[in-house]
Length: 365
Ligand SMILES: Cc1ncc(COP(=O)(O)O)c(C=O)c1O
Image (cartoon, rainbow, N blue to C red; front, side, top):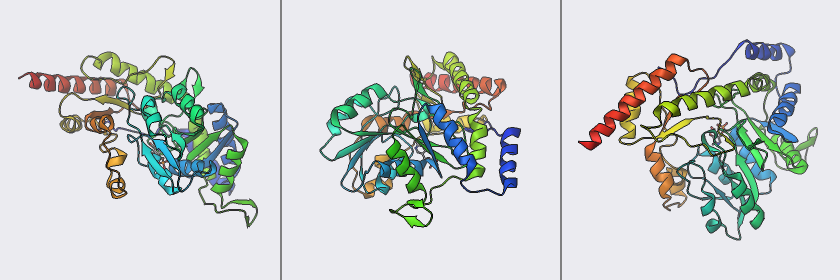
């Protein structure tokens, strides 16, 4: 089976982790600091603060911006649930704006209609590695005095005209094993704002500036040196990994562009293809099954938009967001990760073309 995701672990990762294990310093220490500096440099920002996950990165970023009960935060309904859950964690209210079907990202033209006097921040999600329209989003934020916290969990190294995601507002990244680079579990907050960065640092470790003196309520959301060592080795390969993902995506689009609705990339945008997500003409679930029978592990991201998840229904969300709802029925992601061989790529193209042509022929009957 060609898996939908596959972390690539080499000798560098193994040696780096063993060196930490032998050093005796396992928890947050010098490797975390080194990883933070290297990640900040990659993003082109002054600060990066490592956390225990992408979810805790979002949670701390929202807290550090002073977002809490009574505040509304606008985000996408078509994302992994933690983009919205982190807003709930701080006691604020997620407000969903429908997506644009060509990018799967929040549609900026729909944002202003959802802004109220309670709106404090925007959380655009760079879904599948494709940057949101940050020019439009930053202009709206400036017009309405809103903060911007980018959910860049799937978009390490993505950029718009060379400017990296995570450097427009406060950035939040995840290093879960399926991501473009991994630390097993882990996350990172990026920021150019000294105060936000300092607040995240303190919140990450029990609000403790001086040992065992706690200025405010904080958490244990730290990364370990074992994870950071892994992260440093992976970060050194991120460009290579991303280039391979981009090349794999190009290979698919060139060969499948006629039979599927391929991902679209805007001029100047660097889409780093965390997922290669297509829209299927016909029965999507059947196609996932048939690809599975042919040894290709396709994924569905996401089968149910956040506002329709039981936990959100329970909270009273009952609006209709037609594009997100339609996309959740149509999308399918193909393996695009850097571990794919030429033979894998050819097998994927052949299977998808055959199945899609079968579906189209069936539809004409
Ligand atoms: C868009 C998005 N946001 C947030 C997260 C949360 O990251 P983590 O799983 O590291 O907590 C993820 C990843 O799983 C994600 O894909």
